[in-house]
Amino acid sequence: MKNSMHTFVVLAYKESKYLESCIKSVLNQKYKSNIVIATSTPNKYINKLAKKYKLDIIVNDNPIGIGGDFDFAISCAKTKLVTIAHQDDIYDYEYSYEVVEKYKQNKNSIIIFPDYYEIKNDSNEYTNVNLKIKRILLFPLRFNILNGRKFWKRRVLSLGCCICCPSVTFVRNKVSLPLFNYNFKCDIDWHAWETLSKKDGKFSFINKCLMGHRVHEESTTTEIINDNIRTKEDLEMFKRFWPNFIAKFINKFYVKSEKNNNINNK
Image (cartoon, rainbow, N blue to C red; front, side, top):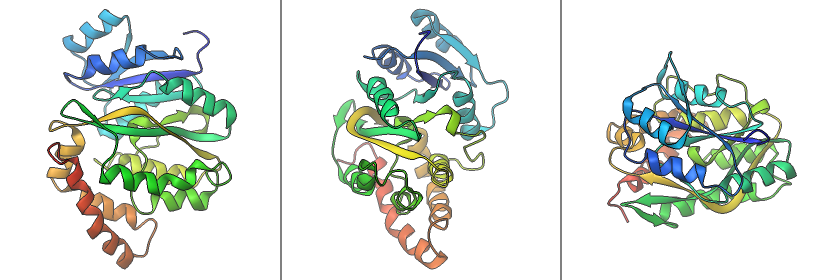
């Protein structure tokens, strides 16, 4: 859309059976955003869906891991606001509308993000232990008087990654690339939020569930947890907020939250 302030960059990888559902959700928005597909794995399946929905594909010819894919996706947008739409996830009808309205009210935002629900076995799960904990951690960011202060932005991140990566919209002129850590495999988003928390500007939180994050056996997060990579990266992140002995203590308890990524865990 010519006058749109917002772009969904659908990040497509290989042949996800959920990609079409994601595309449909970003097309079916109250606020009409620009939409493109970004991929480092071009193939007939992605081409077919792009043609079906009349979307442009931008190919990353120099992929450098997940972090590189995320940075590339942000670079594909020409609008003030950009959301990296993960191919397995769903964006509710009012997602982009609420994000744009929030930006208009808070133009010194760095990132804007709503609450979210989890999709497990094709069922929407609006509350579980993991989601409750994240909502408690995010509580200070509900208040405009707090969500622009570096102290509070860092406090909400100090006990874990409570910001859901696919829910985030970036304010393009407030984000310098590269942003994501190319050496990380799981906590690339937590690392990014920690980096941005040092900058002037707001972490604008919308206290509404406006997107669904899918948890399934083939997801990258599930695979990484099974390989025990996340535990090592979590400890590295905790050390950015706490002395080593406290970071190690917190990490022991944080490991338990990983169990919630099991699709059979209710």
